[in-house]
Image (tube, rainbow, N blue to C red; front, top):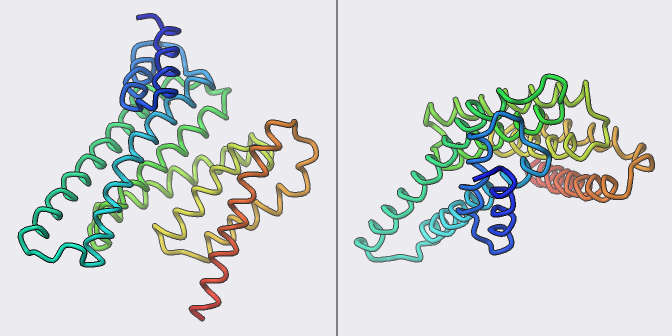
Length: 242
């Protein structure tokens, strides 16, 4: 099947909320053609994979909540719940590893060196999926520690390139800061670093918004609002704990 047909089918699958199909079509685009992904294609791929993963994350969190709140009292049923959650966590781990392999093997090697935006996009995406892996691993697990370190490494590389090549108001740069700061706060348990990163990015961007076009302005202000919400939440939590 030709590339444009696969992209069209992915768009149809998105409208139908058939994210497995969408991911399959866009994975084929990423693996079977030599040219780097276009902006539209990379967004379709990311949306498909994130929604596919989101279904598993939501289900796993629901079961974790049931375990924590003691919603299942029978010992046999507790074992069944635990077994099912273990399966979901294994599915999530497999998907994350597949995405990371896809990016390393088929996507990043095709990114043109002159296209910093593309490289930042997928370096951040790698950081995201290493971070997702830590969600199903215990704090004391060496694998969690390694995946957390890899997430920070990917985010750091992406951020360094974004600072060199993208303006402070660029939606991709701000989205990267949003995810990186969440990783620092929730995964690395480094609230001070998270707040500092988010605040500096917010302050750097806020004075330059007027130069943006309508679409970028809308996207950037939305992300800035999320950054501000996180800062309020995190600083309030620190005040309460203190």
